[in-house]
Image 1: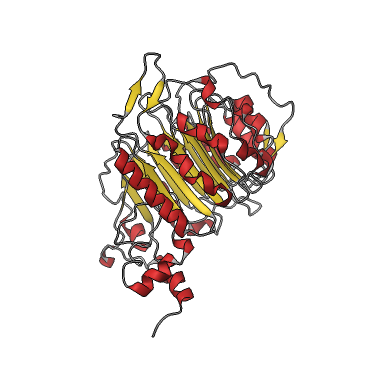
Image 2 (image 1 turned 90 degrees about the vertical axis):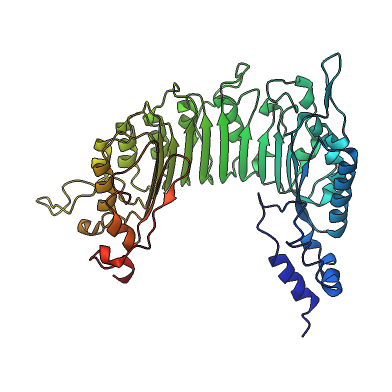
Length: 483
């Protein structure tokens, strides 16, 4: 029985390999779709070549050190895929592979030149700009000059502009005139909703439809993105749902003044901050009523951390924060404990501590250890539990605690039946601790693992899940799944 071409096309689409960064590599192996299904028989090939959805999404890795012949072959493949895509909206990634820089040359004036046409890779996809839906450009500085000639992009929804610097020289060099003319097509992209902007220009010079964006990744390599400038941009992004910013001390004075009042981002749910500067002023100007997840990575151990500024943000926003991931932010166990106490809604917690930070201590673990229900005279619990809704916990870096304290805390939260429902079961624990070799490979939690506790142990880079398929004879407790 022959399948209808329409059904066969849908099956072929489902056979596409799991993509990297949501886009399939252009040079897909012959043993994978779409090339595989186009080589089975004549009828399948006809269906595959007549299905534009199979060819409308790809990543093209440009190898600048290749020969002119390899460049021409790459161009012909791209052009063939574009032809097969018909009139479908396009999702395309261009990646520059600079592992070899033997094509680079320098004139007497020290001006950078390329001896290969690959710098013009944008020109190959430019005629199809009206069909662009998602474009990821990870290219050297000079390649972006070709964007100035791009026409209207009525379908563009997601855009990545990542200037990887001048090949062979990296970010240490910067020609101010390289980005003098910002690509005009971006300013009039009516459907643009997601932007990854990693470009070495003062971001305030970029005329962009900030008010449309729901997703934003913002960084100013070589220049630095200051707190004031970042806030000035975010104040225009009133529809943001997800945001990631990289804050550094600007190489030039941050001439933007802080907004006089705090402002609200009514829909922001996820906030990620990488910083080497004091972000207390950043927190002080924001109101985030829907914030559910925050990730803060402090890249400078000398950067001051003010717990109060962060907690004031949470209180001022009246948000229900569920996920907290802090890397080298807390400077003491009291900082961490204060957050646990004042944000009881936390469900997922990830803490990384440096060797100089005494964050994960016996004291903190003791406060997190769940006690059985003890009533006062009025029938209420004598003490409130810390982090009562925590379901997943990750600890990274350096700890200053005894193995027994860690095990006791996990065990008490895995089976908190004595709390009469005041504490949620801790179901997942990941310990990525430097130089951590427990005396017991199961951390004294073998019975809990049998019952279903997900425990990962290992160093800071490669934690291994502790095998849960253990002999039932090792525990007299009934499994949680059968209770």
